Picture 1 (cartoon, rainbow, N blue to C red):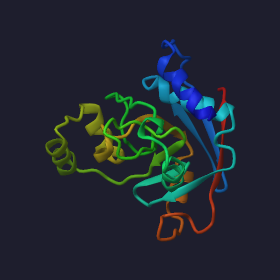
Picture 2 (picture 1 turned 90 degrees about the horizontal axis):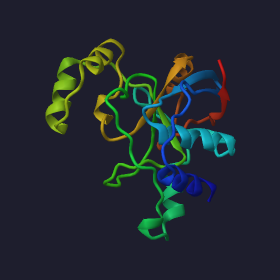
Picture 3 (picture 1 turned 60 degrees about the vertical axis):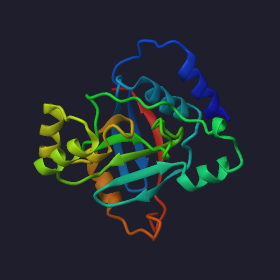
Length: 212
C-alpha cells in the first residue's frame, strides 16, 4: 500500500529540481556494485529512492537471471499477477513511462520492469540490469526498420563499442546505470538457473544510498 501512495505523490505533485547524481550501492551475495540514477527520469528516480528509504527492497532477490540478457530483481511477475488477479484494471498501479534519447539499454543500464500494458508503464517494485551482448550495424538497422525509430549517433557508437539490448529501447524505461562493479553483475548473470530462469542458489541484495 505504501508503494501506491508514493506513485500518486510522484504523478500529481509538481516536479522539482532534483539533486544531481544520486548514487546507490547494491550489496549482493556475490559482491557489491554502484549505480548512478539519471535526472532525466525523475519519477523513476524518486520511486526507487522512496522504496529504499521505506525498506521496499529489504531482503530482495535477483529472481530472473538470463546470460547475455538481464539480471532482474524485486517483485516477480508471477507475484504481481497473483496479487492483482481479482483487482479491476484501474487498480493495477503503474508508473508512467519516461523515455529520453540520452538514456538507453547499453551494458549496465538500470531499467524498470513492466507487463504488456499499452502505456508501457512500469511496475513499482521491479528492476533489471542489462548484461546484454554485442551489437552490429545490421542489428540496429533492423530494429530501426521494425520499430520505426532512429538511434542517435551516441547510441549507435555506444552499442557498437559496448553492446547492450537496443531492441528494448522505447519499450522499457531506463533510469540509471552501473558506474562501478559491473563484473559482479556479469558473474551473477552466468549463474546456473532453473526452467524459470531463477538462480539455483538464491541471490539476495540490499540497496543503500551513498554520498561521494
